[in-house]
Image 1 (cartoon, rainbow over the protein chains, first blue to last red):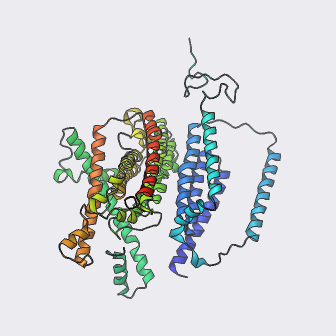
Image 2 (spheres, rainbow over the protein chains, first blue to last red):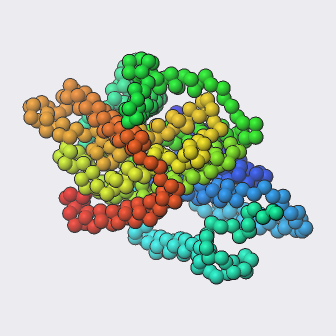
Length: 199
Length: 372
């Protein structure tokens, strides 16, 4: 085995371990902040796996979109709502566990079936395009994948407008969660007075 | 365009002369340019710190560092040694693991981005195909480190500083990427080498700054904001937030932040010079001078000469921009957070979008000037 292949193999093992252990950590850790940071680590290692597959543009896009935008926003949201509150015990926790486990197992069996039935080997591995992939991705996005690409951008636009409508109080006259009329003065103002007047 | 010095090839040939296989030679070669660039970055930081001290002193009519070496040139080294031997404190209520990982996450992406900085035709670590996109992607990791250290310090000023840093770098990344995109549109390539070569036709006249004046200004403002330099140093605004996310840090961990911010400043200056000021290109094309002197461009002596001119030009342009950044820092007031976000989202973003659109239109109309 040549040195290049050995290095690649070691990198693959390390990255896969980080992905698996990190993903388990995201789900199982108690602290939500740790979960969010671990999620960033998982995204980074997935980008590393893309690099090993010679897909450098996809890897960089993965880092930019998932780590730089999605994960930062998740952490941002967690830190802005950094409440230390005790969670209420749920009554029927057992049945919920059973239902979610069965759903997860169904999804897993589906994935395993895909893994077993799909033909993974590429016809000619020498034919990999590597650095040319950026151009090839662009060509595909503007020819046969144009419609899905544009639909995805419309979807994102809709999500953005929705977020703005939800966030801006002057668009709606009633608070969505409480049903009370919204005071139109300051967006940053908290709905309850911060300091009660003591006399 | 495959002329120029190829140090890697000659080094490998040299080692093969001792009977080593080409793979071993390659492995011995690999760490050398990385170490060289790392040393160059750190020396660059020392120079910048000294410049900052001296220029700020001049701006305030002081003398500045004077006793450590001639003109105080050893002052940054003294500063660094002081930080190195200081006690490494982790506050009792802080989250030790995240507190340590934060500064590392801030520094590592910045250093990794030096991968794509070219000092000459073959003088860079790796001419990766995604080139400048790698830098944009890597610089988006930094806010996670800032948020991490802000959160782990368990201090409200730190948390606010971290949140501000993340908000700032998210909002300024978009106009930055869009102005880079306009350059990429003209170059037809993401590689930094191609970007410089595309500007090398007619010396100073073919630099991108003449074709992309708006992009240049937008990029420079955004780069300053990404580096958290004044007028955009809100995350560490000392009158409001003590020192922002750095408040609880001391010793080597603080030094990592310090190093990171200065390496980032130099990196941004280098990238501005690569994207807009012709990179390693001399204001008059070297080929023209060689022709004038009747010398062949591929002669070894000329090659060494052009390579050294390339390095000098890159560093000179970068330090000119660093000088402007330092002058800006000591002469402008800080903007407010709402002004900062307004500038980013309501002014720079539409302008850079319009710039991209106009560039695309001009490329279609005048393909010979805007890259066909």
